[in-house]
Image (cartoon, one colour):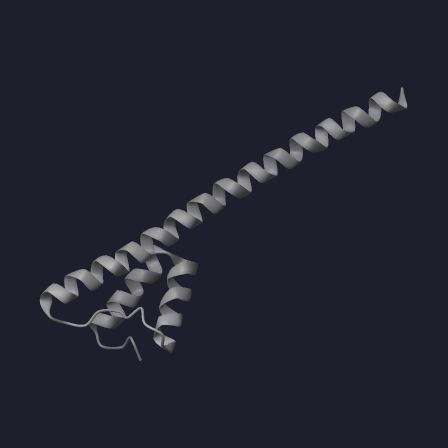
Length: 94
């Protein structure tokens, strides 16, 4: 009887763990998509600025690149748009 109770508890725990992992992976997937779209927005902005003969947001090896990567990776499209607005006003890169 005790063995059956332990099996039931383990099945319930497995279901709970599977549900939590499903929710976490679903959230992670959305964050990853947002991050990739943010980088694509910055790349598109750089392409447009190169056609207009202006400098865009750099991806070289300098401190502004690290800021660009961290902000875009953490905030996605919204962070990319903020960086683009700052760049248009001449406030970024520093």
